[in-house]
Image (cartoon, rainbow, N blue to C red; front, side, top):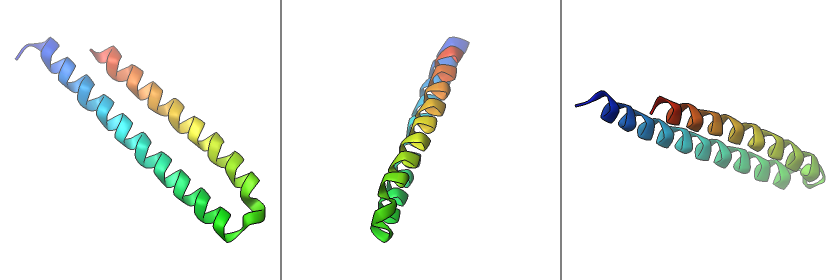
Length: 73
């Protein structure tokens, strides 16, 4: 196989792993926020704010990973 083909395969696999990791992380964040809100409804707004900040950081890290994967290609 040529080097360019291997780079494309590696970029595709890496991008897929980044997206899967981000989806798992967002799912865990959402689950934890819902459980926390169910246990203490009065803390819902603080939990929502924290969840949005963490989700934004996770999305930023996922985008960085995608950019790195596509730069390899």
